[in-house]
Amino acid sequence: MSIKVDLDALDTALGEYGYAYLLTTGADAKPHAVAVTPVLVDGVFRIDDPGRRTSVNAQVHPIVSLVYPPAIPGGYSLIVDGEAELAGAVLHVRPSSGVLHRPATAEHPATNSGCEADCRPLEK
Image (cartoon, rainbow, N blue to C red; front, side):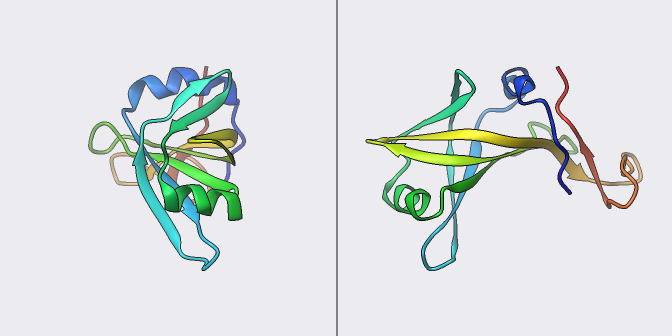
């Protein structure tokens, strides 16, 4: 489920998360995940030294995702999709969308009809 969000809220939301998994896809169509600590600078994520395979994948398929796991059990994951661009040893990811997501449970039922998960947009 995709929910359009105000990406200006990313800076505030990131304060609740420590690291993310950067998901890329290679020329062989296999996914690749690596733990990273992105820094948001002027609305663009900066990832220093992303690694050889991640760098190659991002050049082949620049559409990537950053998945920040919840800080506490039952919390929301922050999922940000974006377009990557490699500049030397730095990977820049320009966000295109973001959502807070967690599985729906009896305690936390789905908030959107037609979705079995509890998704909500980022709020300022």
